[in-house]
Length: 89
Image (cartoon, rainbow, N blue to C red; front, side, top):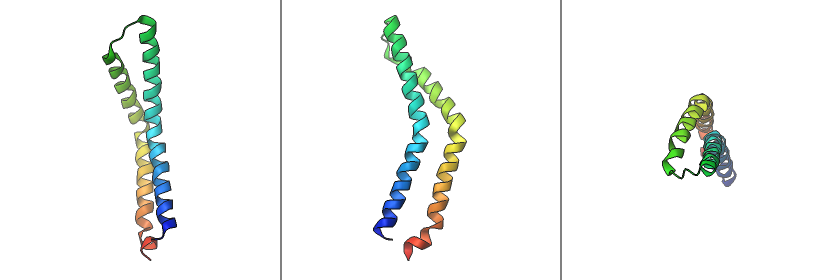
């Protein structure tokens, strides 16, 4: 396995990681900002109020994007397994 192969695999792994985590992180960020604005407007400064809406939003995102995330991970894993003979040369 050459250095170029290692770099290629690591680059692909990082891209997959970013693509898979992005929907969950973006939705969690947006819900957090909306709850923060609501808390600032109503002056309710309870820290636990953000937990339930974020949990529900992240659950819905995982329910909606879960099959796509699984397909991406499965595709990456299958590609790695198929390339093992090329890496061992």
